[in-house]
Length: 142
Image (cartoon, rainbow, N blue to C red; front, side, top):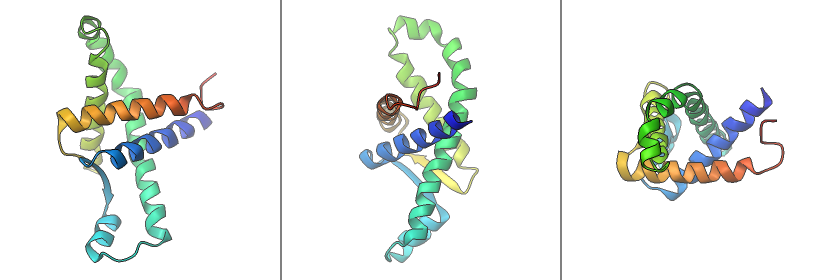
């Protein structure tokens, strides 16, 4: 259970880094949209709401990666072998896009402006951040 929580936090951190680097990837809630419309100063409640939004999207992303991704990887194994593993980036982008679609049914929304460029670059960034965070002692499964 503890490693699952760490994984959700790493996913949230990776999504934050990707949304910070890419302008086409955005996580928003009704509260952040309201604060942006008011153009006022953000307070600590807004910051907590934003952190919880990233963790919520990280949770959805983790569930999608745990449930859907193994099946997609198995079905696309011939293409992945043919492309020497580069098709994995497209699979990761598709999982991110599926997460965005699922989040459209929740109060927290992940929006991706372009499947090809934004989702591909975001999947690379998320993979690198997850790889680096996985190297931290105590985050790996034993």
